[in-house]
Length: 145
Image 1 (cartoon, rainbow, N blue to C red):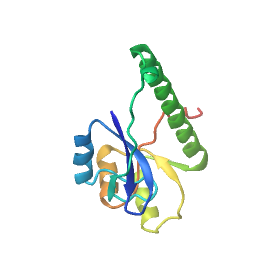
Image 2 (cartoon, rainbow, N blue to C red; image 1 turned 180 degrees about the vertical axis):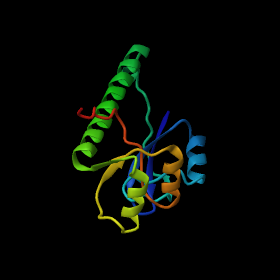
Image 3 (cartoon, rainbow, N blue to C red; image 1 turned 90 degrees about the vertical axis):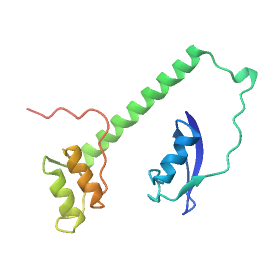
């Protein structure tokens, strides 16, 4: 993995992780890289300082695995927190999600946060219509019986 400092045409800077420099170039050319601040797809590499490992900074395989496990754990905690926040503050519209998202997008229903279920095809159709949706990370809470 390689980390690039990226900047969009609106001046927002952020990091991006890629398999290689070539992967960045391919994703950039395809318009697949999006600014997390403004959703601009006009993203370029920013100025970066070199990351040179010193003798004291070299880590063992075990240390790298430990760091990777800490990173994975932190990411899962963040995903769970995100799901909990959505479930606490948004309306669960269940299988009506695609239709309700359209109604909100086209001004036929009040603007509000919603979540629910949608198939991959339904999600692709919503995105094609310009309706921003994304999968909700983490495990759903169990419904009360």
